[in-house]
Image (cartoon, rainbow, N blue to C red; front, side, top):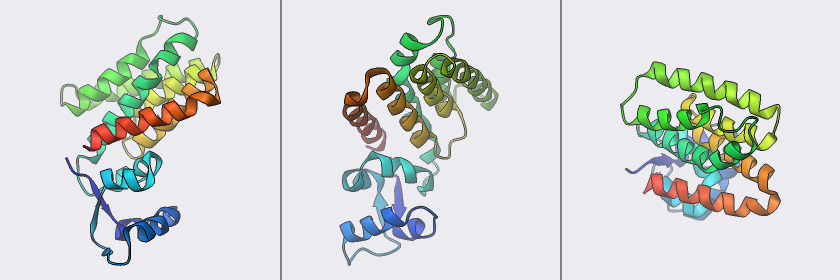
Length: 190
């Protein structure tokens, strides 16, 4: 599936001026204002953060499904942190359930009401986890984003997963986490 965006779309959005300027320079003067930019190419030009930032602006209706799947994979990346650092580990499966339900919803296997229930449970788990561990709370929040409102879910889940990993393993783990997140984004855009 090919997800795209245009310079025209970016120019009409608040908080996109830096990305717009970077892209106009990177794409060159012959690039048309209304010409589509493949998000996979944007990943190579600008990185995962910018792709996740603009994913919800892509023209294709599949953007929400792709975003939700990216969010689920990012939450799964942080799941071991949750399992290790959550209060009473193993006593609550709401974070794992949220990841599973997000994927099932995209596949059309569960109704929207199940998505809402999973979001509520993941939110409760997130609040409880934050009381005991920043790392576990951030990991649970990533899962909450996977089943939450799709606009920006992938960006929020990736940020939460990164925060969980860095909180659990220190700043030295950031580069590896970002590399894994970039791999997740690349896989879903390919």
